[in-house]
Image 1: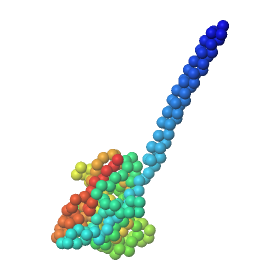
Image 2 (image 1 turned 90 degrees about the vertical axis):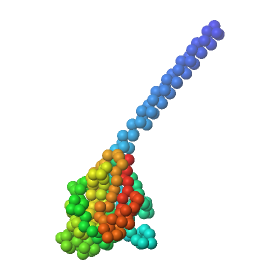
Image 3 (image 1 turned 180 degrees about the vertical axis):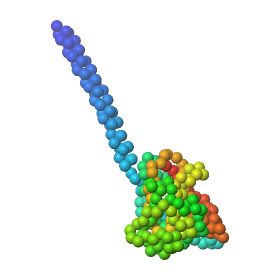
Image 4 (image 1 turned 180 degrees about the horizontal axis):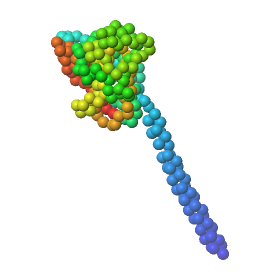
Length: 229
Ligand SMILES: [Cu+2]
């Protein structure tokens, strides 16, 4: 009798233990399901963008004793200027790009195709009000009266630099013909992941043609990589 009771108790304990294990498994499964579900909202939160990319063109960058200073693009990141050798942006979100150009000189005329804005939202760029822009753009008929002005092109004689993105050797974005000493803003539609290149298409370097110095260097001056990850 006692043995039977012991056996019954044992069976009861085994049954309870089995229920606990089963319940635990269900609990773990629920937690795993619950934890996996928030990834979608997180992904959509990231996609809200746009990603803010700020580039700064400075002119007092020592190149060598023959050439002296040359202009160069930098990336403004967490309050510091970092090299533009490789610019990395996220895929799947619009890229809001601001270019602050401290260069007050113009380069030799760019090809007509590079005086147009393309590959941006509306194929437009916005030039923020600036006295120097009005002074130097007068011949091009561009006058920014107040605030900012949206333009689809800039006179090809009045350009300091361009920020042009290439896929292989095809220009896909031209932002923007940058007028001297200005702030320019544009939005690039979301891009697919990949490795692209950026170039300045204005001959802003040294030498008679302007294609030496900054225009004829390793990445980080007037060219570099553009990685969409
Ligand atoms: Cu340039």
